[in-house]
Amino acid sequence: MNDLLIVPAHRELNKRVYWLIQLRWVAVVSALITIAVANALLPNTLPLVPLVSVTLTVALYNVFFCVYARRLDNYEFVPRYRQSLAIAHAQITLDLIALTVLLHFAGGLENPFFFYYVLHMITASILLSRRASFMYAGLASFLFCGMLVLEAQGIVPHYNLAGYRAPSRYAEPIHVFSISFALTSTLFFTVYFASSVMARLRAETKELAQAHLICERRAQELAQANLICERRTEELTQATRVCELQVQKLAELNAKLKELDAARTQFTLLVTHELRAPVAAIHSYLKLILEGYVPQEKQREILERSERRAREQLDLIADLLELGRIQRKAVEDEETGPVQVDEILQSVSDMMRTYAEDKGISFSIEITPDLPPVKATPDHIKQVWTNLISNAIKYTKPGGIVVASATQNPNYVVGVVQDTGIGIAPEHRSHIFEEFFRTDEAKAMERHGTGLGLSIVKRIVEIYGGQIWVESEVGKGSKFTFILPKIT
Image 1 (spheres, rainbow, N blue to C red):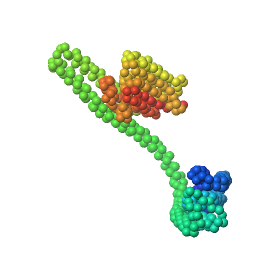
Image 2 (tube, helix red, strand yellow):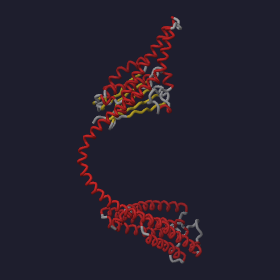
Image 3 (cartoon, one colour):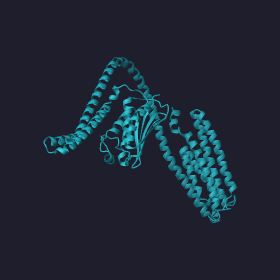
């Protein structure tokens, strides 16, 4: 029980030992940089050989700790914890001694870096017990104050930071006492507050561990009771499987009915919204002719205008029907199978090339050999290519270029249609795949259009688990890219 409660409270000790080792590498590098900078600012003042030697000694014993700590991963928990605790004590002790020696050779009392002892006190409070932390506060105070006294008494030499501190300050009792008192009190206050926080955290961790053990025992009791319930429910499970299958079938049928109803409602709204004004216009044209308000010589013009509007509405109705079919997921009722995207691109390109030549546009295709098939229907893939390529040609001025390509990446077959047309403004790109959306630039260049082509393309691509996106710049063209999963 006690060993189990130790685990949560000290689970991270070995990791924290690694953390302390890593920090020491940072400290070694920082010390070398500091020595170099100090020597540049105070030339011929610092004893470089002792300072560098002590720093390299720290690096050397850090290598030993690093290797030894890695070996602890092969031990059981309790021995590993005790060994990690010993490493932590050894590291902190050696670090305090090394810091004191570095301070001695770097000015002693004159060196402002003596407050680095505080970092070691915080580290000791995190890793060790409160008693051990106070012990290290006393050790650090003893080492630092002892160094100051030995230097002040002339027992050990003092290395003055010429040009930075007065050469006699280290021997003045008031300075020795004030610095010693300030550091000692700071260290003990730091240990007191840090260890208090850690003690609270460890107590809460122990409470959580005890609660965890209670929960585990209750969970075992519940597991045994659950086994009994499971045995008794097996008979009921077998009896309910038939019912579940029937319910599932009914749910699927109900979902399909809801989808069909939603599609029918949406289709009705779209037709009402998009067809009302054009049909009303056609009706008005014909009524003017029938009632004799249009002169004989202008009747043909009015009839041709009505015919154009009617043709536009037929295109719109065709797109609406296709969109409604896709929204109802009619693709589930069709036979999908392996489809070669490149072969369909070849067949579509023959039809599109004539359209491009009539507009004076250069049209070409690029196909990577040996493309894998995708799961789809040929008609849907043909519709994707046709809509994208016809849009590119439609919105590209004479003399422009349209290129369609089929390639692959590790997981998808990639289709790209790129043009040098009018482009799409950034504020319109997020709406370009919405139903009936057309930019003002598109309407100005080509009045005829339903605004459903890209919406249909997006629905088709997404039905088969793909994606489509656009990259564009106004006046420089657009690049539509779609991806479909390979059949492996």
